[in-house]
Image (cartoon, rainbow, N blue to C red; front, side, top):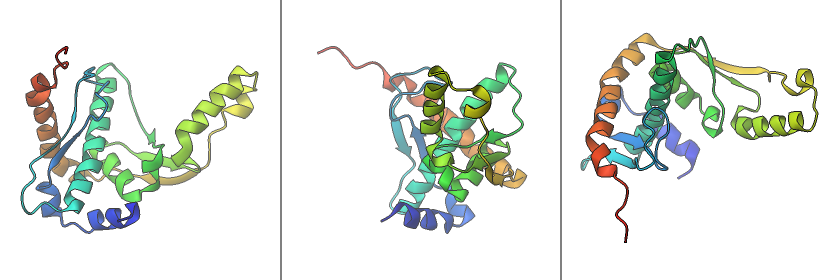
Length: 182
């Protein structure tokens, strides 16, 4: 199945399926913010014999959105005020996921032309600046391509799932200990 076909299946799920979907901890390479836990692991929790690939697809999208919500909460607890966020990376190609992230973070999001390659563009710009590039030319903001406003009802509906996501990590953290020496 293609990525686009899976996203179509996820988007077709009824709201009740979203509320009962498995929870996914997206810590496939440990987690930095806010846990600083290099041993954290990815976990699907809550699967049953009715779990379909669309439910797992949704769980992954939601789990990454919740990870971003935890990172934003850490920034906000340190006094950072955020009005709008720019979404970059391959996921920015998906309006469905972009809206889910805006809803989970309760923060407006936007994408820009070339957002999918935002990380590479940022690295290239840093290299250009290091090579003597003019900041006024190098750091031009790309044109806006889409905006996503958080849906208050969807944000409220996500809160119980976010609480479950956070509780699941706390319960499993002791099991993510450093591997024993051989």
